[in-house]
Length: 114
Image 1 (cartoon, rainbow, N blue to C red):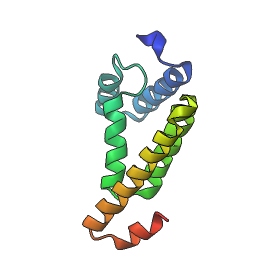
Image 2: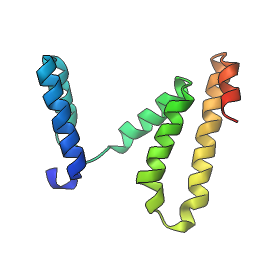
Image 3: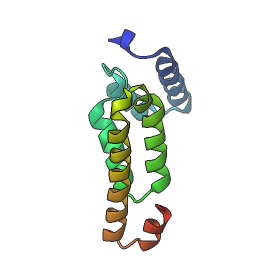
Image 4: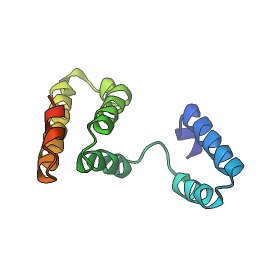
């Protein structure tokens, strides 16, 4: 399974491990290793949690950066027939962001979506 993970991700993981060990964050290092064990890339459930968490926390910057990441890593590799569906997904997530911001009483956050 290790071969399925891109080399840049493995290097990044190793740098994180070294930093956590150097700083003496033993508990965080154990949690990081447990989380990374057997994971090939970014699991879909975890990615969905990140996107929905960004909408729930009313952080537009976080949501747009996640959408940009998805666009640059995944959506750009899809066949052109999926382009309209990708735009619809992005639009729906921005609408969800606006609805959740309104429900939380953060009207100013809704104006950011424009």
